[in-house]
Amino acid sequence: MRLKVLFFTILFFLSGAIEKLQSQNKIHFADITIKAATQRANIENKNIFVDTYAPWCGPCKIMDIHFQDKEVVNYFNRNFINVKIDTDTPYGKRVSAKYQIAFLPTILILTKDGDTRYKVDKLINKDELLSLAKLAIEGPTNPRPINPPPPPPKKEVAITIETPKVKEDVIEKVVDEVDNPDEKILYVLDANAENLPPEILYEEAYFRMELNDGSSIAAAKKYLDTQEDWNTKKNLKFIFDFLYDTDSEEFEYFIQNKDKFQEVIPEEKIGRSIKILVENKLYQGIPRPEFERSKELLSLIDSEKSDKNNYHYFLNRLYSEGKQNEFIEMCHEYFKLYESPIQEISTKYIESQLVHKTGKSKLKSYLSLLDSIEEPEENYDLLLLYSKLYLRLSDKENALIKINKTVAIGEQANVDVKEAKKLLFRIEEL
Image 1 (cartoon, rainbow, N blue to C red):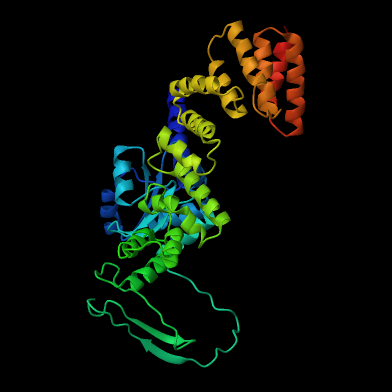
Image 2: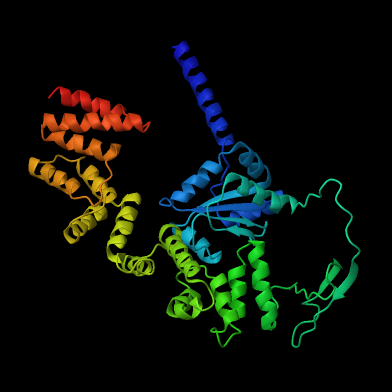
């Protein structure tokens, strides 16, 4: 009895030690709201790091891997109050609205009071993540080269720009050691100032784009609100440079006036930007577009194939979100509409059906479905699925042909063929 108690005591402490070790190997995200994080941040005098994600977001899972890097873990746990927020939850949706989060993953570095310092709405690597954190904590670093050449003589110049109806001292730039004294430099010291002239707002937007703190979109909108005519070459280029979200007024204007934009911007560049913006919305945007909206967006990339491509997008999305019943129902609709389905959808559908007891007529219909695939790629997964179907049909001859080919292709591609070899053993026993 004493030995048993001792054993469980040791096991208890070991499990605690292992759990503690595992928690040290990743960023510690506190299960708290941003409001609670600001309270803690004020007490500890720290910035707040926020990772926004959703269960369906693939790039978010890659970010989770970066959050386990030893150097990243040590730096973030030491310097930040870390919070992770699921944007699919009601609270997450409120956070998304407050911080204008349109794409995932989006990471935020906030002040201890919850104001945005930096905002990045794309997948970044661990080095970029660490650099961003160090920029927030340590400030910019500008290493000077060893034994730099002597600088040319420069004049000290002070430039002050006076504008009507603007608060005093709102816009002023004192420039020390400027290469070209005639160069005009603008800098807005008060981003919240009202009645700034359009030229200042224009420069402010580009300046904030370089800051990478998420404020450039609002700054661009301020400038556009001053413009009665968006069709000038200057404004068309400006709108294009600040295109961000397919649900915005600027994007709608861009699509409706694409011919005017093509007079200013190369057609290839326009096409590339549309593709990036649409794919960002489809695969990383929140909220996720409904069926008709995704079809409309895909038509901007390829109008002829938008219907079929929309089914592919939506079916893959339902599958990745674990909405099995909706996936199966839409698959039936898809197979009726298209005689040559794509391999990815067909194999996912059949695999999901094979978990249930299936009669021979159904199994034969699945074989017919595989045979009808558009441009099939004879890879390990497809051949393995064929083998499973022939095994269930007790067709040993065809099952052996497919499974031997499966093993050969798998070994050639350095794929783990354990499942295929187990299946081979079962087929040989038929």
